[in-house]
Length: 552
Image 1: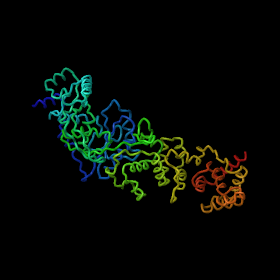
Image 2: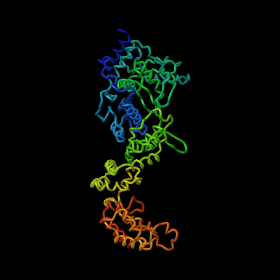
Image 3: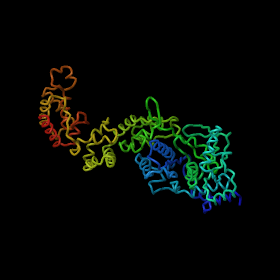
């Protein structure tokens, strides 16, 4: 037995599977040529950020566009920073915007797929097996340096203006013998396992980033930690083992990880793995004071994915928006294919911006408004019910009593060639719909300044006489015009403008009085359709109520 093998048995006395056995357990995937296997691999240490949602979305679309696989892996090796129900927040955050993984973690306790466990804390023996293999090859060693020793080295490096870290002459235990290691372990000294980096300061690495193109960087020379003193792997090591065994072809992630690529490629090399392709997404930016900055978790409520669910941006609208900032040619495609499902768009990593995408809530709102206008009344009702169940329970309790009636409310002007774009997001639905429900409407009416009170009373009194249950939309407004003329109003605003002294007002003023009497508002969707939804008796009741209010 070699000294390296003896060292490996000393550090890993428990029985472990070999890397060769794990290669058989997790064989290459049977997928079409060119299929992408991508993943989203967050840590459950806080809320899901819009940048994370964007990265997951891009990774999913890249996989789907190639008949590949997208999976969700949870990297929970940092237990100190983990938050309660962090995994649930991630899974639900993705799911609420239609991002479903083909395999991986699906809840705090459940997974699906053949390449798991997909939670790193459940993969300890796998990491230990590959760490042991590096020790056997002489590519990893136990390091007994204390925090004080590491601090002393940092100070010395700073004084000598050298790169900080554990490497070369500063890697005190790089060539530790089996005998010394055994003596220290037997005496109870703590240690970490470090990579014995084969890198050189003179060497450069080159790789082709799927988004940013060709990149050249210095080779890694650091003896980075593989396993911490408690046996938990570092992100760098765990991700290499996981991406290999889960057969990841493309690592798509934020560009804050570019600086780690030399370490990651080195791990793939020393472990004997084929490295995946890397694609690094620039951070989502926000305009401020004439400049740009990263969207901030601390400053910007829209940084949290939960914000979009809470205010009720439809998931379809958010996905549409993410596509516009993901691929520069998407808007042109959508204009040419207005009714085609966006899944048919040919998504490409190469079409992504090398600079940070600018997040624009105004543009998202515009896309959302247009998106909602394309939905059927059934789709709108379903989405409003789903949103209000969690975010507006009082509203939900009212509108869920009679689903058919609620569909009629949200179906107004929805079958038009150019449908009214009333709603931008679902948190506007309670205000939009309140006057349709007596339980919600405060019955206030904005009559101020339309016409003198006595004239408005006259209009409503006459309207009661002419309003019919059976009249069609084509018949309704001409009757309003006839009534207006009979009461001394111009038949059109332009007629009134020519000779205002001849009239009390115009037909638009008359319509406004009726509109306010029925809805309480001066602006609303089509008044005829509103009255059809409310029904004859309710319309007459509201007209009577308005006459009484104006008579006081």
